Image (cartoon, rainbow, N blue to C red):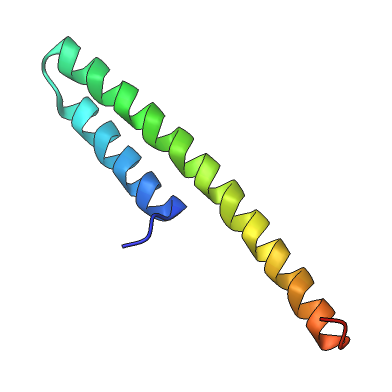
Length: 68
């Protein structure tokens, strides 16, 4: 399965839920750190997805004008 920002966000949400349910401080902190890492990956992937969409739109526009 290809990585997507939605997949990363789901992982982050799962870590946040596990953190909320944790009785031990160390487990809660570990899950919160994991959630932060997943959110960072999701944000990076989202930016990449947006850039790819813009690139594809430009390529389609060039093809439509018969330039490519």
